[in-house]
Length: 93
Image (cartoon, rainbow, N blue to C red):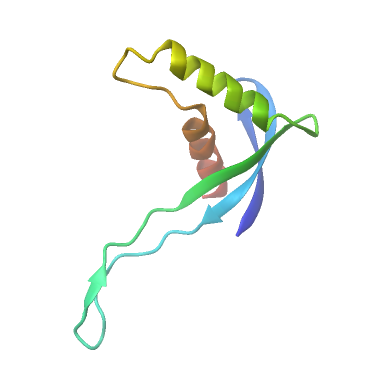
């Protein structure tokens, strides 16, 4: 389901619109004995990022790509969108 969440990111108030997927609980087996499924944690996929009602998604995407390009030789790559998605999940749960 589409949600709009307001978060504070490094002292900036951002409104983020995206798809929120609720947790799917683990099920060991169905009542007929068939095996169940492992379940899934909740997740959030960013569609748009707004700052002062202006869409800044492309700016965040460009900054994220630039940073990852600069630290490309390291084994650990950063992802700004994962950090933002985690902040959105904290706000929604």
